[in-house]
Length: 429
Image (cartoon, rainbow, N blue to C red; front, side, top):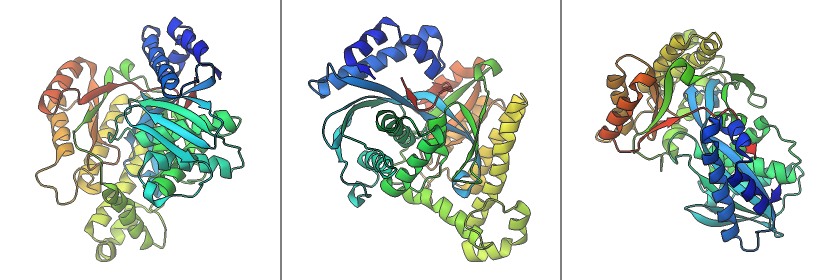
């Protein structure tokens, strides 16, 4: 931690540009843009919290994530391939001498969390306050003396985009608390676990651990959740530009709002199928097992549950195959598997549009555009939880400009985001 004005001088003079390159994996020429964003956060902190000019502050960052392989496999103890991206939530934080976390989020205003209240609050479900309370409560219950802090935050992680703005926020809070009160004893995986507990118990969303792990660990990561308490995380090298491709996230201009029940239906139906085998989750059940019991599963759980179980088994295998292809340097094979994952999500998982939707199928429209425009090259798939939000596309660099222009002409200007994979997860600047 440093004096706020000292941090400002270092950021604006370029003294911290090397750290920006480390965190974001950017070209040195682009580092100052990231440094200027942190400088803006410090200025916002000073205005929002008067008298803070001479305070010692910390600067923190946590990235959004892109799911590459394994769509809805993590909550069934499966495998995923994911990566952190160069969009992130960043913050300045300092002690405030109270027993409250005062959190100002740019564009949303101030909220306060009383540190004496450690249990989930029903009226706070699906709110930022729930995430703050959950992360702080978990640190306190682990025996750490968390005190009141002032936090000024801004985020360019697209809300409702499948880039997991909530996981970025949980990681950000975990990194802040870990640095300020816990002696940095929590590693990236432990912070991710805290984020999942917070999302499940305090926020009220039954998510798996993939989002938090990808945000917290950083880079391209293959994660095996066979033992969810101790997931196996392996970093994998991927130079997209070197392969001649760009990563695009296309905002379909539909919202994730009010879709918690749709998301919850997927693990619920998968677990119902697992229960017919006397298990609590699908990991370990094979496609041969499912085929042998097709009739019984359809009768007890319904047809869609059977199809979703088939998707899990196949996409769990695909996530592992994608990682193997990247490690072998076979990028063409990797793209083939990504596209197969997308087809499985559409046909079997059925998380492209909300049940009963006929006129409003924005994600399906975005996928159709990718299919037509890429002409058999690259790959594309639903991104994240599905039902609304975004589509992921790996686009050849020689097609990128025309692809982006056509997609934005068809959907909306600015809807096609060209991202880069960030090498570092949750970070103390």
